Image (cartoon, rainbow, N blue to C red; front, side):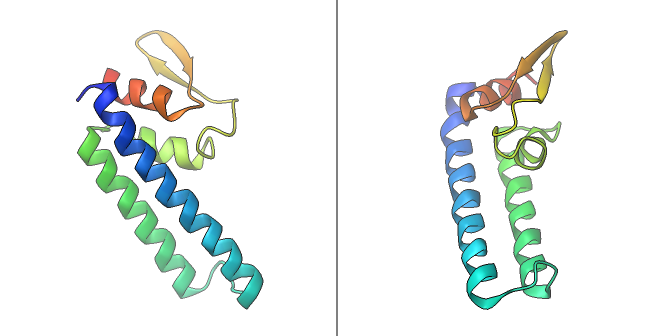
Length: 104
């Protein structure tokens, strides 16, 4: 799959996860929900399953989507790089992530 084909799929994936995270924040504040409660844990497991499903769709066999979500906070942390061949590449945007996934 080409990066141009992967990018809109990843954009939708990131949007859904950010939307859900925003709603979880409301839940935490309004209901004083415990982040370790069974409901919240189930939501996080579903989010992880969604990430793995999207990874399979776009051909991410290296775990880049999980890395981008958890290690870089969807690109917010600029301290992380991905290796493409022997070159380190910063991955801050969905477009950059799509290129990394397509390069594999």
